[in-house]
Length: 309
Length: 107
Image (cartoon, rainbow over all chains, first blue to last red; front, top):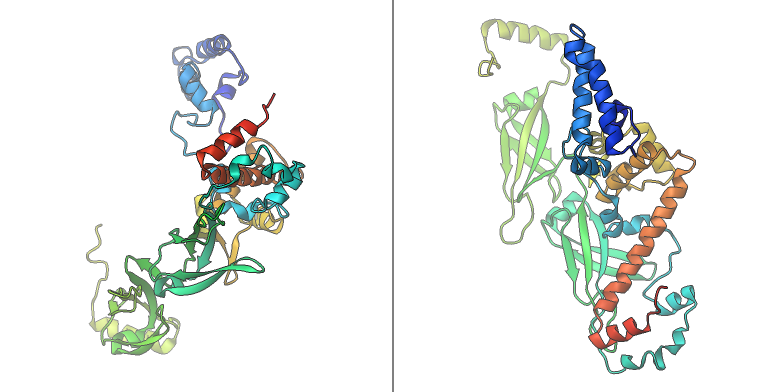
């Protein structure tokens, strides 16, 4: 996993000057040049990596980008994750240390920093009187189950033991969608209106249901008998289990539609698509083996005939 | 938000047992749902952060909680500072000007 850095390849320190890098490269290039090492593939490979390393480090622009981690040792762009936007984003509060002061209470803030908060009505704060301003917005995140997101729901988001928000989850909400609750943010100043609460909603993935636009897809195991002979079997849907008719002569990959059982949008609900997966169950059953042997001897079938060879 | 297997697929250097230890140490706080872990984007970024701190800066597991604790404090303060800035930005310009004048010079 640990690849050599171009500095290690050239045998110089990361703080080396351009001159030191050039000298190190010339020395190695002389030792390793393929013309001087005929029939030694390892020397040639080494020569190539030395050249590549020098290529990167001799270009001040590339070297700086490499040092900042923007490109890797081959000069390819490196996707950079960054923790900061997450830490400062709506989800960052999850790692915020406990017992952090609460800014909503200015008295706490003044106390934390020992400022004379009381003086704000005096000379310095004289401009405060008579101004109105809207309160700031507050951001929260919440997670809902797949089924609740699909059919819509009402949820209570507790902010603290004695403060909560009642949130209406609209049917079909997408993972990461932000709901705005007007006037549920921080109070305004001087009689100004309150800010809004912004709630980023996450939809938990479901082991069976997969979302496909307005539709829901699931794979449903059926027995050999159910597939061949048909039958009525229970199927889970986002609104609860329903009974579905499997037509006679179904197969793995047969897709059946349950109309209106997908995302429960009021005007135009989606459908649930059920893909059947035939499961033999007891493939070692001697009776089954005996039957299949007899059956196969008079029924030739190649399920792979259309596969590209 | 992703499940454990997807996280392990996405972050190749991550070891399942090691991650379990991190969760136990409360360095990473996945959501628990139906007996399984769910990782938010912030958790994925934190896993990458821990790997980076350990491998690239050679911080060992003894010192790591200290580093994470300090980082969490810094980000906590930055979040609070941002809230304060948002509140200031929503003030009338006269108030903003008064606050600017009342700020003592930094040196």
